[in-house]
Every structure is written in structure tokens, then in C-alpha cells.
Image (cartoon, rainbow, N blue to C red; front, top):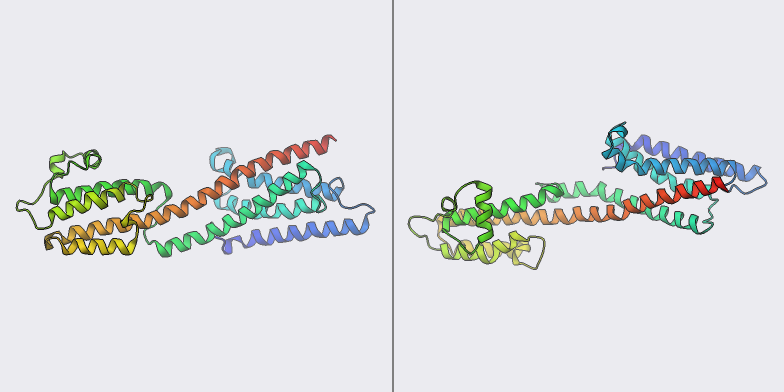
Length: 301
């Protein structure tokens, strides 16, 4: 989610509410004989508001899945999640008169601070990531598409080499996948030129030793083709060692590996976002539970 001009109204509303809450807190502190703690009218109002805002922010996941909550656009809910979640922190601080209190309230405060800070980090990350990825990777894919792309590229690379170099029984997995993907018999895929071309053996060997292993697990291991400069050097050496009729094949294989290498970097950035969600979401759910317990206990006693 990019933070742009469409967030202006949310920013203004959040600022006004924060200023209003602060003004009410200061007014009560100056006119009352007791500190504006959680059991005063201003403390209760601020506590209720902060709980409602946190509840709204935490309902974003339910909005995505439950049909009855599909009121307003997803963009509207995302903005509300960001700004009302951010506003909840100063409201909670005012509600407790900037004191953490007992064990339960201290845990709630620490959780809220961690969640808000992680939310700010996540918002910055989501704001910057699309722009940087678009600049670095013209062909951008979603996280779910990347694994599928790797599988298709692996089969295409095998079919390309097998179509010029003949049978490769060593690549058993790729042979089976090629038949499954294309629906063709293996004999129709593995075919070589009528007259053997110089460099066919080198091309086959390079595929089996380097390309195949890289495309099987492009995001793991220390393989030479993972490094852009080294890969370009290796493909150039291969091109010089094969017949000119195979130069196009070498160039196409190099392009396949280059595209996969780009998606590896994309996958890493997507994983960073997923790791952030693993931290942010469970802590948010725990906060909602503890705040509910705190509200029930406060009303009961």
C-alpha cells in the first residue's frame, strides 16, 4: 500500500482526534482535583475509543475473508487500519495517564508499542517496495507466481537443449515433467540435428552440470549461475565453444537464467514482508484478547 494523496483525509482526521484527545486530557488535568487516570470520565472515553480503534484495525483480516464485513473498499480498510492503529497508541497512553500500571496493563502497553512500531516499519516497507521492485525488475511477479515460473522455465530449458542435443536420460525428472507439461512423447522432445553440430556435447554437459541444478533450486546453494557477472562469463565461454547455429540456444538459456535470477531477488523481498506479517498479526491478535480481558476486569472491579 502506497502512502499518497489519498491518505490526506485520514491523516487530517487522525491529527484532529489526537489533538482533541490531548486537549481533553489537559483540560481535565487543569480543572480536576484528581489525575486523569483510567477510572475518570476522560480516561474511560479515551480507553473506549482506543479499544474500538484497535478492534477496527484488527478486523482487517476478517474483512478480507468474511462476506458480511465487506463494507467499504479494501483500500479504505487498509488506510483505516494504518491510521487508527497508529492513533490508538497516544490514546492508550493518555487513558493510563502515561503509567504502565500492573502486570496486565504493562504487557498490553509493551505489545501495543511493538505492534505500532512494526506497523510503521511495515507501512514504510510496503510503500517503498513496489517502487523499488518496479525500477529493478521490469517483469514483476507475485509471490505465488514465482514458484510456478521456476518450474515452467526448468522444463522449457530442458526441452530447448533436448531439442538440439538429443536424448538426455540423465535428466530423468525433467524428462518426465516435459512430457507432463507438453503432452508430447519424449521422442518428440529429445531430437537432435541430422548432422551433429560442433559443441553439442559441450552444450549438453553445461546444461546437465550447471543449468539443470540451478533451475531446480534457484534460491538455494552457492551455484555459479546465481551470480550475474559469473553467469554472463560462463555463457559467453559456452557460446564461443559451440557452433554458430547454437548461439541462439545459448542466448535463450542465458535469458532464462537471468529472468529466474531476478525473480529470486523478488522472492526474497516478498519473504521479508511475510516474516513481518508473522510477527505483526499474531501480536495484534494477542493484544485484542488482552485488551478485552483488561476491559472486562476493569468494569467488573
